[in-house]
Length: 71
Image (spheres, rainbow, N blue to C red):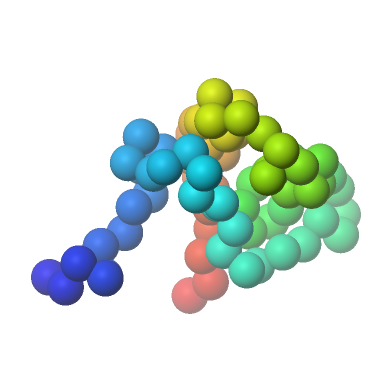
């Protein structure tokens, strides 16, 4: 398998600085993005969160089945 095709969905395999964004952004009906599972505040402040905070977000969203990709 080509290494570019490897999916890194496990929160522990990602760098905490990796954004969970999957370019399926929508917080139309509530405060949670339908693509990545983060709150609007987490999305807006991602670059300001420290590594521990980012790991906590990654842990929570992966447990909830995010990020969700199209297709």
